Length: 236
Image (cartoon, rainbow, N blue to C red; front, side, top):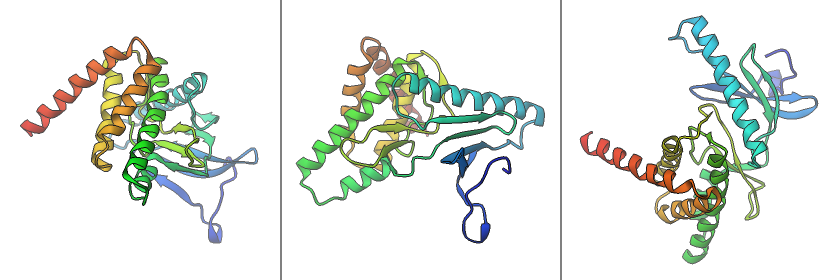
């Protein structure tokens, strides 16, 4: 990554922010602004030519999802540049932000009264549902809706909800795929945030209100996906 200036740590060593199964994240300077570059990793098990084609398509689709989100009034990191030669996406670095996962952990471990915590959880759920209603109304599927991929900027009660990491995202109007999106979020909430049933109920309430008429079909598909999930758990 020598084409743009890289932020270096002590002794001039490049600091990688994060590495996942799909990509590496680096901190860079883009036209003088702090930015993140997401570099998609090659899949060694695939034929190199096929991997090149698929990686380029995934990079383009991810960028398309980000742009479509912003066109639909959904907060995402601003897109700066897409490098299809190296399968990199350069985007805004949201430095003063926290994940929904960390926010929920902090909220649930606070010393506030139970009623106060429940009220704040419900409000947070409504904010998430409002954004997801916009997302699916725009036929955007996130593909990995976990609480680690939902951010709060300058975390306060008024902070906007920001969606990140559309590496598995795509554009599709299918109620089935939207139902799966919601199911992934529900499982993430239940597995990492105990007693979050009321939170997800607030998500669905706000989601349905924002999405409108089509929400009924999505919720129906969510129920079907839940049933399939329970059957898989029972069978093993």
